Length: 256
Ligand code: NAP
View 1 (cartoon, rainbow, N blue to C red):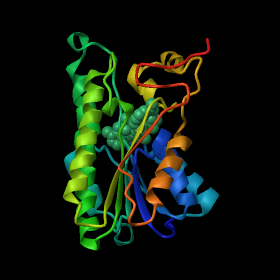
View 2 (view 1 turned 90 degrees about the vertical axis):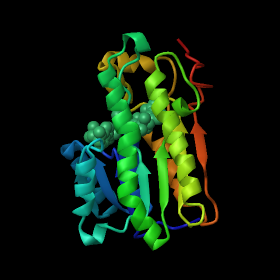
View 3 (view 1 turned 180 degrees about the vertical axis):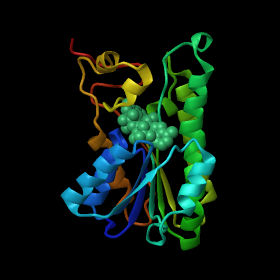
């Protein structure tokens, strides 16, 4: 097992859900953390918690990953002591809507594609040259079961997560002659703000998890800690993780 003491981790989407719990778990393991996301107040909450619980340093990177110039500028302005990023958790992502393609709003497609694919690429492109130069690093993508299966109402979101999968595989090939590891964590249902963002309604979001026990952000955070603490010769490519009540994107056991 590798220790993480003093390593610098960047977590996108650290203002909520899986990203927030991952930032906290990596801080517990000894990392200093860069917290990225749009909502500065929520990043500050995560940072405060990390400081109080583990007394680790944190740096807030308030940015919209869809904005290529903003991403490049934010990274070019990182203080010297935060520039050597050891661990990149590309977690920020979202879904919008569950309409059939014929009924969907193309603006929703733009938002998902711009965030889940292009935003992930912009951040990777900003961080990767430093990792290659230093000849070390870990990259973990938040994929999804939506990158393995396609389900009703999932069309473009599933397409973005299939793309994340292809990017992860391509990146592993590009980095095969380096010690840099590339991994993907692909969850089924995790109760976070995800469904509220997707459906635009708290009640509808709650109904997604009715009668079953979903995963939570901590479950995914601990999986990520496992991945980045493996010995240097071990590269976990992909982890598909379901709640026990879920068997596939289409099959969920509900008790009522
Ligand atoms: P969440 O609670 O809604 O958190 C999403 C995070 O992404 C937030 O911190 C949000 O921060 C950030 N984000 C979204 N758009 C952004 C943008 N344009 N720029 C910067 N940050 C942005 O959802 P979650 O469940 O934790 O989702 C995390 C990842 O897990 C996503 O990639 C999602 O696709 C994946 N996933 C989730 C589930 C699930 O069931 N929940 C299942 C499989 C995979 P701001 O709003 O502050 O910017």
